[in-house]
Image (cartoon, rainbow, N blue to C red; front, side, top):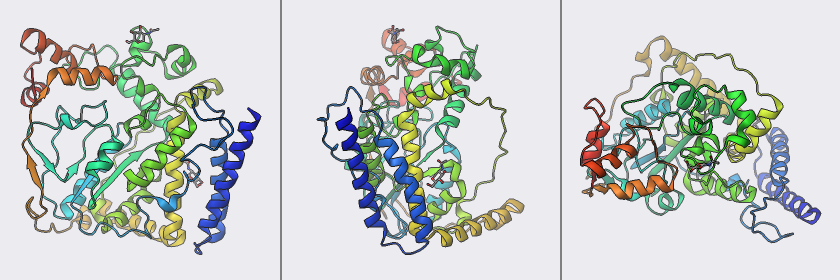
Length: 457
Ligand SMILES: *[C@@H]1O[C@H](CO)[C@@H](O)[C@H](O)[C@H]1NC(C)=O
Ligand SMILES: *[C@@H]1O[C@H](CO)[C@@H](O)[C@H](O)[C@H]1NC(C)=O
């Protein structure tokens, strides 16, 4: 244990030294920068000093491979100084994560696509608002039967990231990739209300998310357990074999393609590094809304007005702060999400320093000024659409796919916490279809048509 601790400290020290040697290149705002990095290094140490997990198969006393430079943001996929902005993109991938302001950002990015004259051949979902066979990692068998194009022009619906597949096939040059993350505790409260409390006593006739789960099953069917009580009892209630259990454990890491049940610090860090260096050009932090918008504008070479979205009225909720015990349980079940948020916060702040902090905040002020004008009169944020490029301009081929086998879908759901016993969930309906040859959806639910279009028995 002690030997382990010592080697962890050594690794942390090496990182700190390495980081310092890298960062001395930057001359702008140097002092503030070091202050910030000191904080960052303290946090990095904190992360490293977590007790090693029992399940860990690393040899004792050796530094863990692949994590020593996990916080080296000079290697990020996109930096404002290092990489050119996307002057002539061919496409974009927006991972639309749940409960993280992703609808707003999806709107913004579709405006970006229009501004660049990209052809309107966004990827259609396979059922309802999602695709890729969520909550399985994106699987190519799950493209809808028609409408898929390659390379990707716009993939912007709800799906679960797949690092191997995306790195290998989708993230070609000219395709930008972005997602949004949000403070883990706020996100969890929102998840708990949305999927569970707000749906108490309701049966949806068109059920995509498997409403109520996993909280309803964890509570033996009870539908109104307050969030504080839930968190107090989380270690007793949580069942890692239950459907949708990821909503109560590392939900954000899960949607970004990580294994939500793996709490091994080194493994989490390796994945975060991979996401930062090879997968996402930029990760929006909703708590840094304006900073994130300026970054997006820099990434995509956009005038600020293109990304303008009217601010919806924010509802303020009275929230009961968590007790120490609730907080402790939350932190243990959302360890990867907390690390993820902290990691991309550091990444964002590194990008700000890389741009030059003072200069950057002048840009933030400019953006706010533009938006204030647009708030008064939306005319200020109108821009002229360029002529649209066609698919052939960009060498985009439409793929004529096949219908997916219902059994393959069911298997993917069974293997990835995606099964559901609610009567009008596609999983349930496809099982009924298999058994009786008919689904029992009413015509008001368009999932039936999606299923008929894209699946076969
Ligand atoms: C955990 O969930 C699985 C899947 O629903 C279930 O079969 C199992 O009985 C549950 N375990 C407990 C202890 O409730
Ligand atoms: C993000 O990082 C900055 C700089 O290190 C820090 O001051 C700030 O508190 C962090 N924000 C959050 C929400 O963690």
